[in-house]
Amino acid sequence: MKKLLIACMAVCALSACTQTKQVPLSFNVENRGADAKLPQILPVEQLPSVAKLPDPFAWSDGSGRCKTFKEWTRRRTEIIHEIGSYELGLRPPRPADMTATYSNGVLEVVIKDNGQTLTLSSPVTMPKGEGPFPVIIGMNRPTGTMAAELFEDFIQIPYLHNQTAIYGYGVPEKEGPFFQMYPHLKEAGDYCAWSWGISRLIDGLEMVQSQLNADMSRIGITGCSYAGKMTLFGAAFDERIALAIVQESGGGGVNAWRVSETIGEVEKISNTNYSWFMKRLRNDFDGKADRLPYDHHELIALIAPRAVLVLGNPDFQWLGDPSGYVATEAAMEVWKAMGVEDRIGYDFSPGHPHCRVNDSQHAAVVAFVDKFLRGDTETNTLIRNTPVETIDPAEWISEWAGYQLKMN
Image (cartoon, rainbow, N blue to C red):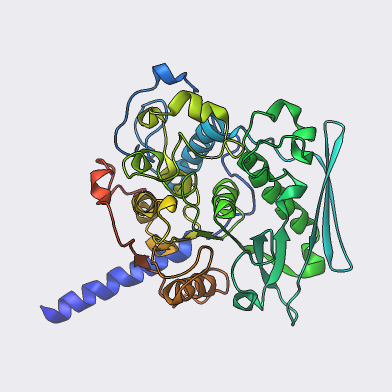
């Protein structure tokens, strides 16, 4: 009997490993479901009250759940459209008129639309060797707030977000290049603009990839705090990104709006930064988070089946890590449904300054980078380090826990 049990476990492990290898880690387009049917956007008074976290698999029109991995592509587009409509603003498509050059160590992407020109210019740090090289895109710095040594064998590129939309320090600043190019979007939040700019930087990288010998299937992105939110939105909306390292993103990032309403002095719909988000979010959903047809566990889940590592810091109450923990656990159900739960991990451990990592978080970053960007498939990435104070995720997850998608 013991031998039979061991044999069964070995077969199951082999089956799981085989399935993981069959599920792509990244894709060669921004959104495979871009042509999918969009959901109806209802006024808040017509939206049903959903106290728990909404079912990420359920079609927006109430007609059931997506059943297959292929259908998840269409479900992603529904969630993206709802987030854009109720929270961020709808991102414009890729402009037709774009050029990119790499010269003297600088990647320059020139974007023209609506009679305006927007230029992204990023210094590129090249590794030694011949490649092809994986790529790390850091928010504002080549590797974000992570140590450059972690990515010494990577192409390192900073995304300088003020070239897209200017950081307003709490005051809406809508005169930046993105809003000059798209004046009809001046009510949109900065994360609409910033995430769009990340995608345009990747477009430019595609155009010069042969010069850099860049491996476009192994792109990582990282940032902390408000730039952690930027990282999350960027990876959620662009399927070319293989790994997102989302550090201390807090409210408006990995945290679920519904859960945050229950845990005290944290970032919520009522008090978040409304240069980052559309005012519609506050006007329609302040005190009515239960009316949102989605929540941020679904924002995280937009990354599936790609990889994401969530890092927190419970020493800072404002970050609301118990909410981030619940949302990440809820999002994990989507990776489980695809049989690739090793591609999502979290470490909410204390004992370090804001936007720094402790030893366990450093080890988690190394593991995720090694496995999903360097290709070391034997690395263990089943990392689950909860906050000091936690909420039981089961209290927020309804009957969709344990759901399975057909993968063929």
